[in-house]
Image 1 (tube, rainbow over the protein chains, first blue to last red):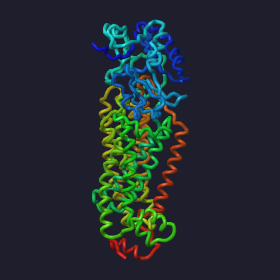
Image 2: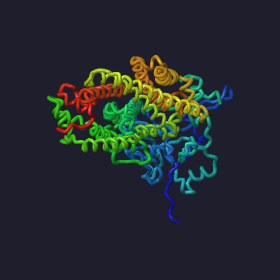
Image 3: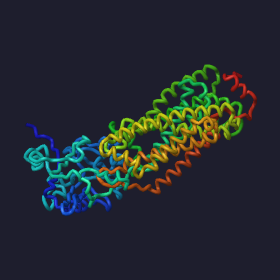
Image 4: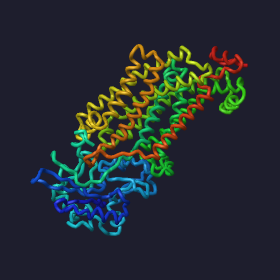
Length: 201
Length: 397
């Protein structure tokens, strides 16, 4: 049987995430992400009333969607999909129209203030090509971030996705994200409009 | 749950800002002016024939400046030309690139056929700078025979017929730019292209009225608002009234459905109707921009007053600018992952560019209405010009 094409994905097991932000820092260093912008970050909320209070965390990054809205939006095909499913940006051809940033339902993209093009998480494509893991996965203290080929049933990501109830962000957008969460709280996964509806900004 | 506090998150400022909003404003004005000019030439409504040239000159002048806002907003403006060959058939912007090229090109040729007769006559009857300019602009086609003029009319009709769908597309596609983005609840509606088209008609009519008032008074050969011209302006104001009615209706429909939409859509409706955007939306966009102009064009007293009509026209322009800003920026302020509005601060560089582009626009419009035979040839020359105009057919020497 012919070998199936690779499809890289990430599973983030929130039962193991301690919210240390080591992933945020290692990504910044590995990818030389300038000040004020992030390829990955950890969102954190507090829920409940004392003494019944819990904090929930949600590491965020590009979902490398199977049906990526950014791919449809880019007017110059600077955003493209690599062989292994990863969504990448050709920095030499990005015109910086920012339409992809409007199209992304996940706030994953930003303008690199130094390079002046759109930018986002690449699943550390340069490392993966050399047989290494993404920087955030290597550095994750609790081992919450797992990276691998979803099309290979023997890979840890494929097993985790198969054997656990997993969630993706905004499934109703039909984007088919390739970042899966285990144990994500519903109040942290999207936006929160309660404050807006009260008339506060 | 009610008691949720955000501890840590990354801020995501609004990306498509005031430059894009103003770009939408310009293309809307252009499309609106073009459609009005076509009423006489394409749809054969005779009374609008006298403003056909003015409408097309406006359409061309506005579309000459509009795309500069897009290029100025790019982070890599020097790469803009790649839009022409690195295409993405799934991106509305890719379609827009060609519409924004074809539409003004078609309009310029259309305009030339409309003015060729004046250029040719002016070459013979005028003197000085205008004579030289018009001689140049005929491009050697000085034939004033009846067959030649009939051929012009045929081309006017053909190019105008092509121009109307192009004008609608060039503004309709801007609606698709927003509507195709599922992520933004305020944008993602099939009504968006229609809302953009109707607000284009409202603002296009508003600007046309103002331009007609000023240019007919100061730059036409008669240098006055003749009774027929006044009557036509009041007539156009009545058209504007109906455009306002349709535009307002679409807006009401849009917000009723938004109110019954998902959490994000409902929040968008709340934000505009009760939240921090209500002054800009209900006050400026709907109140000043649609309601007041509607009343001014509806009341028997004000609808026959040039002063009130021009105030109404000016207000529609302000209202449509507010609409573009509300939808473009407001649509992105609604958070996707946060619990507060995404922040927006206008880049001073962008505001400066908008000011400079507006100055350029006014200059182009001034030069065009000052020197082109938009309302016929100047009366300085021999009475033969009069004969041309009255007889409405060519006099062969």
